[in-house]
Length: 95
Image 1 (tube, one colour):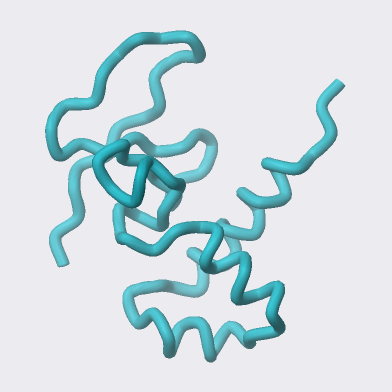
Image 2 (tube, one colour):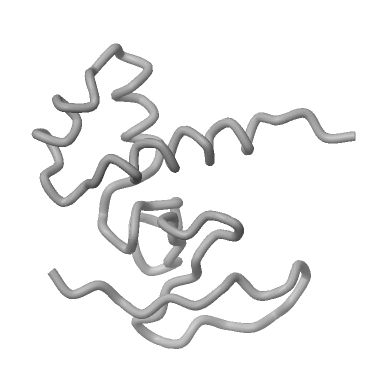
């Protein structure tokens, strides 16, 4: 499957628009992308239509890594790890 090109996220507060077909990598995460034209702009894995929330939910339901990879053959082990890191960062307390 051909993935759309990615580029680093623009600086905070930047009004840089994405070009058609381009997705934004979520810094510092290399595997998580956001495309406003895909999945309603939800964070997804590597430009695929697999939301981070879906992966985190599967882990929360007790699914083993092997089961998740069987359910989504396009995923890789590192995708699951990074999805969990992303979720942890999203709920981390801020000063």
